[in-house]
Length: 271
Image (cartoon, rainbow, N blue to C red; front, side, top):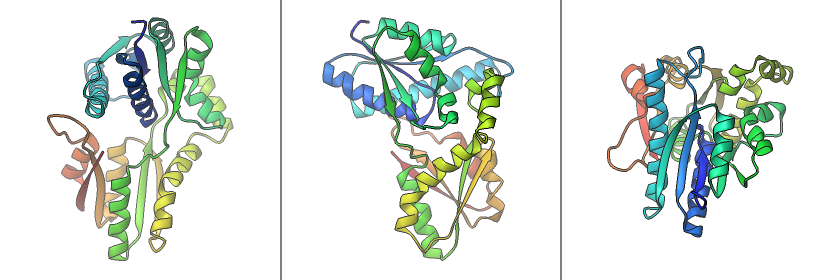
């Protein structure tokens, strides 16, 4: 696959930004696009819940959704996906050797925590002899339509808005206790996520200055953290992706909100 452009996905918005960039580049060059995720089953890995089969299904769904996103934007582009059963660094180095270009997502943070989170990419960059492109994501954790609806609803009701952000420890840190210790020396990972949320909310704070915003950042699954605040809410606002072709699916967080929230739930479609 000498001319193929390969993208390493990890389920983050930054990786999807890399896929978007790579798709445009593949169209420009007239080459194929390959989307991959490297994975080895670790029974003690707390980043996923469930057994090996359920984790594999989750990852294949992630690849499939990324493929649908790219295909919708570029219908004529030849796109393939593969779940690589190998540790990320050697798998991506091998992919780089086979491809014309390897594309990875970059969070773009200058802190030590950002360095650690991107350590897989840094190892790949050091080890490969092929071109690697790092694409910086936009950093928008929340989708524009969802935030606009939530802020407008709070403004119309004259009430405060609670923005809830859930985060989990990156898998790469779980593999390396030494890396976790270094992250703690920088004050832990939570301040990094607080900054991500603050940056995402900033444009809407300016647009709706009358809305009192409470920012809540907590470690845990998105559904659990969100639902823990539903009993104090008048309206819970969640998003639904619309880029999937064919069957429209509700995500697990939206499903959880619809079934278990103790207040009214607004589901806002977003691209």
